[in-house]
Image (tube, rainbow, N blue to C red):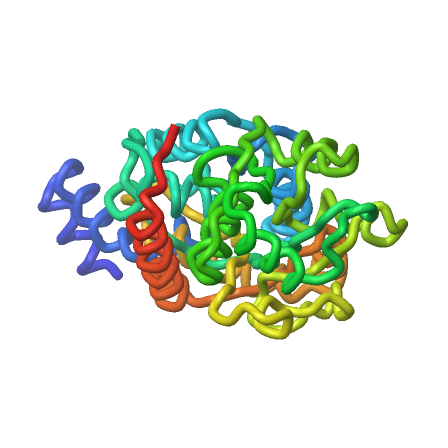
Length: 332
């Protein structure tokens, strides 16, 4: 010890301080990585409050806060079909303290349809797939169509007479309608609305023929008999709606179209912070309370590795790029 102190004394105070800092640096870096997060974290939601994305984000934020011991603050940045929130997140400091729950629209389809002010490959780190949810083709209770086969027969016999409501260009309700037309070889008319709720309201009033909707807005109306479910877009029957046949079971092969949600961080976020997200998501996404609450929204909580999520995103991108090209779909 005496020899070491004498050596430091000969170096001088400045050099000694530098030497000590260098020696301690690995330990400090480890302590800093283990400390993440040591202040509140912001979760950006790309849609208005009250919808599926917002409700799921609040459930996730609560569970993440419980594990991390730090508040997870929800910030709504809606607009431009989710693109505003994605751009906002991409421009935040890459320190791990801001993340976004992106979904099929702004993280998948929007960049294929229109020029958006961000690049999913350049501006984001894909962390994990956190939820998937099927869509349900519904018609009014008074509809003459009792099955998918009857609806498609009518569309074949009289092209461009059957219509379907959508949440606007590039929405899942729009893309699912386009997929039905491609797979079945029929012509129908898409009727765009500013939101899925408006489309469902007009469907209930008998103003439009059908909607392919996410489960949350229509499940109650199916249970009360105001809407009739003809098919669900999942590959297998959903445990949340086991009585609804898949499109394949209903007579239309090759149609699978699920909503999905996942966690993204700004590009450049340190690996230690990314690893902390992976760790916390692995814990909360299997939490029974979270899974039950997600199921109540009509979605299934899930968890993936980063590699699995990247592969999933690539497959979704390829599928919808082909659909957009085949059906000549245009953005707004």
